[in-house]
Image (cartoon, rainbow, N blue to C red):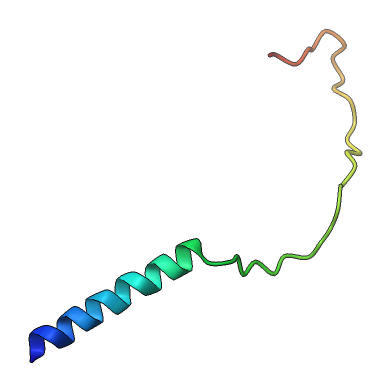
Length: 51
């Protein structure tokens, strides 16, 4: 009888994990949109961004 309980618990544990992984996201982040870059240019004119 305990074997069936352990099997039911293991099945529940695995199915809950699969549901959390593949279920819909629950992210409640605010919608901020695009944030423009307002930084200052690099002070050294010979500096170039490496690719």
